[in-house]
Length: 191
Length: 196
Image (cartoon, rainbow over all chains, first blue to last red; front, top):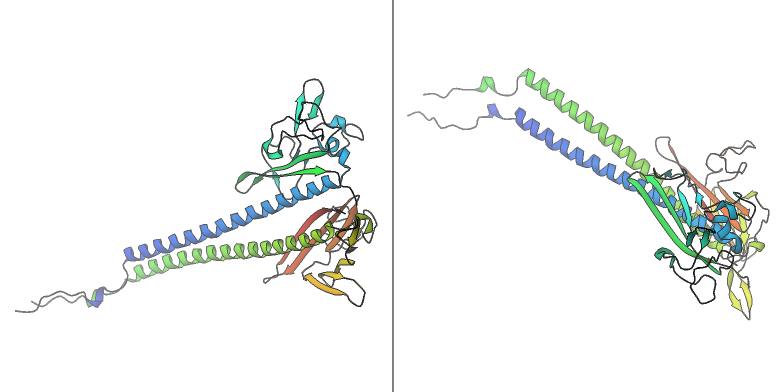
């Protein structure tokens, strides 16, 4: 009886189209993973760059506040332009721009930075620097005038310590982002 | 019965071969473009981040050095004009109610480098180089007697100090040519209030 057993003959060796398609799919998947990793890393770098700009801007602004005449800092950098020492609207105010960052869509004036003091709006007297406001980030409520009491009076002319927060809000590569830096200002007395 | 030989049907036809070749070439070309673009972007971003980190580290060092000084003792004392160096002494603390000042130190630009010197010009001078990548001019500035970059200064160097009231504004640009003819440039700015 003649031998009829089958064996895979070399005549059919090599890739079929299906195999080729599978290889291509695997290759494309690997490329997709690679490119998404690279783009993720690039995005992360961009986020780090934005954070660096925000941190530097906030620190620079705090240094600027420290370099100001302590008794006038609040009046010059609060949200009320009417109490500016040089006349209404002559001081820098509470909003500022940060080079390299884009304003958030909800920015009221196209600026990215804001200086926050512990204030409250009085219906009659307008903006007041207050000891009794609840702002955890600023350590409020607390005594600002050094009289040992926390009251509901305006201390814009009698503060001996001034809590301040620099807040930045911008539109970043991953959406709207925010950075806050809090500190306390006091009068520097040279020895 | 003799099995049929298929040797005459082995391998791919010419059409299959051409199609496979086209498919492989297309995919590989696309892949090469993607990889090349991704690597280029990653390399550019890496270089940029590297120099940004370096610039921030150097300016941080300068700022911390100057922060402990007395604003009135800084040299030069000219307000609103830029200088590529600053001389200062910082407070070491109090002794019998008097401030004890350190030996004079100077931070300045020399041959594209940020140089820190203790006792500058004296026999016991000590020197350290903090970076050698400083650009000859600040980013966006040209030597033309005009304020090109809009920061209020004219023809300022890659390292500049400006005294503005009680604060010192420090600006630094690092610059380095990369492979492929690109130049990576990073600028940073720091504001310092002298504490003593």
